[in-house]
Each structure stands twice: as C-alpha cells, then as structure tokens.
Length: 282
Image (cartoon, rainbow, N blue to C red):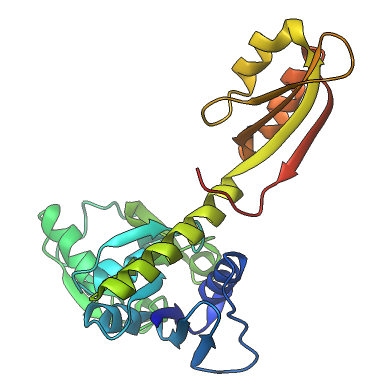
C-alpha cells in the first residue's frame, strides 16, 4: 500500500487535500485524524508536521510527501523535487527595521534570526558575508524587538505581517518556494503506485493550466484560426451542416483564453465556448 505524507494544518494542508481529492483519491478528513486509508486506491495518507515530512520520506518510512520547497531544501534529507504543485507560494527573504534602510551587502557582523539556518547560511557563504545566525522556530519577527537579532530571514507571502511589525524586505529573495511533491520509493510495487499518483496529480495541474475552446467558423478562416488555437499538437476540426463552415476544438492556456476569444470573434467565429477541464493527460 502506497503511503503518503501530507501537512497536518494550515493552507498548505487544505490545498493538498483538495488537489488529492480532485485526482480521485479519498482523503476526507473529518476531525484531527493522523491517518486516512483509501482502500479503493490502496493508499494511506498521514498528516504530519511539515518539518517532519522530509525525515519520514527520506528514511523510507513513507513513500511520498507534499512539503514546501523551503523545508525540502532546509532539511537536507537528500530528497528530490518530483513535481511543483502550484500552491503555497512564498519568498524566503531578509527583512529589517524600515528606518535603518539596510541593503543586502551590509549584513557583516549582524545577527540574523531565522527558522531556515541552512538556507541562510548557504546564502551568506555564497555572498561572502560574515554574520551570526540566531536559530528560532517560528515568530521570528519579534526577535528584533526583543533584542535577540538585528534582522530576520523568513517566509513572506503578502508582506502584511512585516508591515505590522515595522519591517521591510531587504534585497532579493533567498528562495522562491511553493508546495512540491517529493518521494523515495524502495519497492517495485510502491514505485508503480507512486508513478500512477504522480501522473494523476500532474493531470489535475495541467487541467488547471488549460481550458477547452470550441467554436464554429467559416472554412475560409481555418488557417488563421488555427494560428490562434493550435492546440497541443493540432486542433480537432469537423464539418458543420452549414455549408462551408467547420467546428473547431482545441486546448488553450487559461491565462490567454479571453484574448483568444476576442481574436476569434474578430475573424468571424461564432458560438465560442470556453470550458474548464477537470483533468487531462497530454
């Protein structure tokens, strides 16, 4: 039975469960269960602290895990990123008091509070900066007010928390992170099940990227509309009962859908319909 680790709380946990359920797995958590069994798909889901997931997967106790790229690298567990998942985006950044106007080349001799000692140490070493790292486990913003640190290195999403504590981002991000799938399978049986899981998840992610566009147009416009909606390899084209008219169906990038609709309309296309896709394999 395939064993998969998921974050046990927060937005990352909610989005991970939503993705997995969309891929056809039974993963409804009604309370604070630490384990859910999907008998039909022969999968066990474990809900764990994000910082512990890499340890369990790297030791071969569990087969796959969903974890932030930041934790994956920070834990130095020797695991590879299998698939970026498109949610939980954040930046690991340095931040300091707004009134100090520090730049990223002025860190020598400063104390840096962070929950990401390895990532910060590697960044400082790369930039030949001598600074003291103050390891903390969460709520690092208050460390400056308490006199423990001069600046911090922490995950930033909207930046609102930094603003509320009088801090601002310094320099470029150390790392851009998001939720990723990672894993290490030790048996042929587990590898086969893991590969299927990856394909299903990838299908959902593709479906979130693309939409299906369908429309009718004069046959004389075929070459031009195919330039606008080329599909993945080519669009599907079928004759209509209306003389010299054809029906066209093609996948298109979701972010381009409205512009494509405008362009098709200008070429005389009608009955333009854009449909969401639940999942796909390309």
